[in-house]
Length: 109
Length: 115
Image (tube, rainbow over all chains, first blue to last red; front, side, top):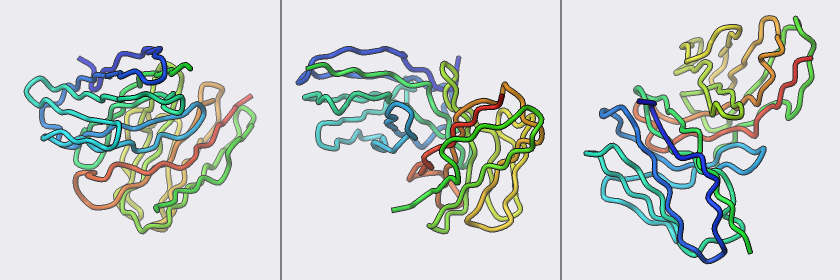
């Protein structure tokens, strides 16, 4: 099993739609989880951390299921500006992070 | 906000040249990292450093070395550039000496082409 696995997409959705991405990770000892966003030819930027209890930031909701080693990101009311690649990120060792290959989202008018 | 600055946005070098990629962060972070990103392969860790003069190999250190003489600066060195090192290189930093609870902050990347 790969360290972090994501569906590469692309996910094509219309503006206003709700879209969900999933990610699985292999290391049951992992304790830090994040979603990053990466625009084309730009650096990854932190979108949100993922907490055990789940957390929300505006239109974005992240969930963690430790038993299934599964992380999700839900985007409500999609905007054109949400078009990007979303990277699932999990800590590997003490302070290193492992990045998934990303899920591409394309939001159309 | 933490700022991570990479010295060059685009770089073209010849095969066999020694190449230096520089990265500077301004928030006194202990940890610094070098990744490369290639289509279909994602981000792969080359080297990282927990402190000045310390370095640890990542997943793909072959053909690379690093230098951390000052806390704010982490340099990636391609000893003899080859065409398969053509890639986007990303530097990152993070605070603390434990779990990266705040994630990493990345520089804007250096797109290196080796011809």
